[in-house]
Length: 260
Ligand code: NAD
Image (cartoon, rainbow, N blue to C red; front, side, top):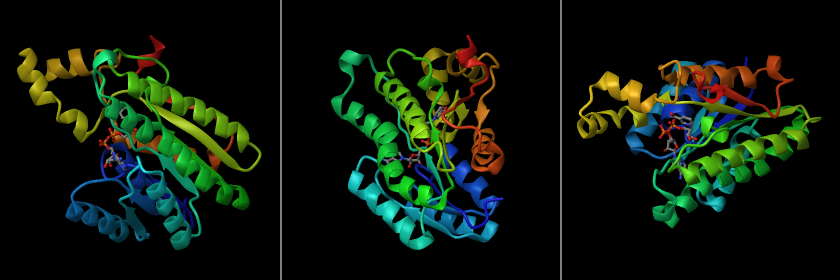
């Protein structure tokens, strides 16, 4: 389905981004993965994608807070693959704090990684997509692109920002064969979420099931986590030709969260 296409997924050494990179590779795309982690583990993942799916996979360690590193990553992809056909802006971090105590450096990092990096990648990718008359930009937003929660001011601001950015670029490229959409997941079961459970069990004197249902999934009516594979399947659909009429959309995958 994606043979002869190149997908670049920011923040794809773990969690949702890795699942998206893997499903694109499984469908024949060459992929550029990006993100931090232990060098051996990243190399194992990169070479594993190549051998499992018979595609070429590069890793870029570009820091999404650094515009010059992002530019270099995009230029490397251009040189190696002749451009990026499918761009997934997925890298993201979180910090939870009342606004009066919110560390300035955390605010700046969240806005840079969760919002501004998408501007830097998109501005580099769009000319090539327009030239080819085909492209897909998929932004991993969040339910927090549509509704707020207290103590997550930077994250909610960045995710609402990415919603506006998605719609704006969708309009700019609407007649170029390029679609721009955002996936808005609720709580997704990733290592990041899993790691919070033991501490919360201890702090609140709860069982694992109680923590999942009453704390983590308090806002999610299904009381089920979204899985990374479900998010990846939606990204794959958006990358396909069947989805060419979907653009500027905020696609919720949140177990009913924002319906409330
Ligand atoms: P994760 O922590 O598993 O993965 C984050 C990835 O981003 C990692 O590969 C990490 O190395 C990379 N990264 C972090 N800082 C970076 C930087 N400065 N430069 C480059 N890469 C960097 O997280 P995840 O849960 O898979 O989240 C991925 C995206 O999905 C984020 O944008 C997040 O906001 C969004 N999201 C997650 C959930 C959830 O419940 N997990 C829900 C909604 C939206």
